[in-house]
Image (cartoon, rainbow, N blue to C red; front, top):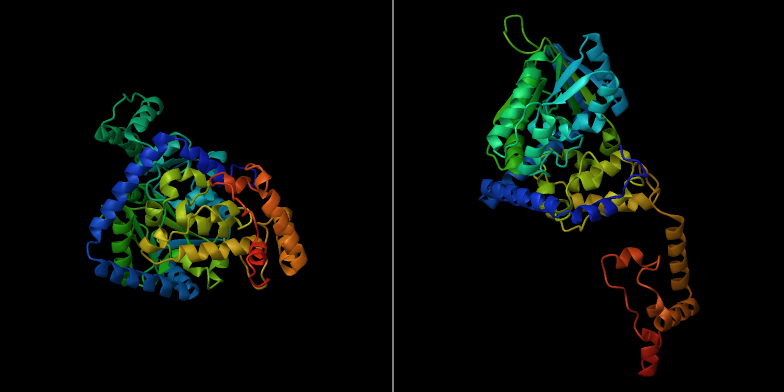
Amino acid sequence: MHAENEVSFRDAAAEALLDPQLRANFRRAMDGLMSKRRAQFPDPGDLQELRDLSTAIRTRSLLALPDLLEQFEAKATRNGIQVHWAETCEQANELILGILRSKGARTLVKGKSMVSEEMHLNDFLERHGIEALESDLGEYIIQLDGETPSHIIMPAIHKNKGQIARQFSQKIKDAKYTEDVDELTAMARKVLRQKFLEADAGLSGVNFAVAETGTLCLVENEGNGRMSTHVPPLHIAVMGLEKVVATLEDVAPLYAILTRSATGQAVSTYFNLITAPRGAEEKDGPREVHLVILDNGRSRIYADPGLRATLRCIRCGACMNHCPVYTRVGGHAYEAVYPGPIGKILTPQMEGVGVRHDLLHGSSLCGACAEVCPVEIPIPEILVRLRREATHDDVGSNVAGRGTGHTAIEDWTWRLWAMVLKHPALYRIATWFATRFGNLLPARAPLLRNWTRSRTKPVPARRSLQERLRAEGGPHV
């Protein structure tokens, strides 16, 4: 989790902007992803129809969320899936550790899961003597370097093949240096295939959970998700409580718009539906399936109708690919599990708007994110709402950390401003001093530093409006 003494988004973004290789990597990757997405939606009318349908499904699912969660739990339990509930990341980690220890598991192979990143599960298990190996190629690459994902779909998008080639040659035993993508993939595959066979347990995320059938849906391209969930004898899935939908029929349009929005594919290479552990007559699959459903602030977000749309997110990453801020500074500048536009509204709501006030202002409010979001989350509107929540403790609000993002200097500045505007005599004195001495204030003065860091210093007029009116014989104000 973010700590208050860590580097702020503003400072981290400024540092990222000074890295030409990082900017080139992101520019090339983002241009490709945007182009592929456009190619998948040649007809704007068809796109809007699919967006409307997907938005309606997610909205309807959230409106009925408590009932759907109960229905899903009952159906999944009847299918043989053991369902566990966790209010916090700490509880979820302890649940998973308990399951692994009960089976004597010492090694865990993981499919891609942003919720496990949210939980910092790998570090937690390592502290308790359990090896957790990422099997998604991008996740495996950044795990070798001890990094966190810079994108929710493509974790290693900040690296080019030359950087990966150097990394593999240094970190993988007997690996030679090569920039051939197929050879690099083969190196990782050789390591991971053996791990799949040896692992005591596998872990995955969940893209959609179907209340009607108790089914877990998993979207992936590399086959590692299927290997993680089917080869080891124990499968543990983790998901946020908002991922449930009512019926299998709801999954089809969400899947169609997810893959097109995320990677520009009509369909992903693999789409896994997991409904039960291995049956008596079946030859493959895990003997036990556990599902950990995590809250971590989601129920608090759900309770506010104005913020509930945050939970419609299907984790496609399209908002990141089109964001003029994210595409220039990358994901690590956000110091958060969820970077980019969706992270700017989700992370502060989870960790507190006062603690992550920096993220709320890391946006131009251009609206590109809302324009491409497949489930039409009004990200700019929510950002504006959260900016207010960060500095105002409004009655009836349950936003985490509300009212804690202001400073004493800011409070007194606005009080002084209000007092000057309420008293004409003070206003005239203030404008007289501003017009005569305002230009003497240095550009790097504390009151101007944040403004002049990226803008020209304001230049006060030589005379106030009142003085000009008096000089020209106009009416007095």
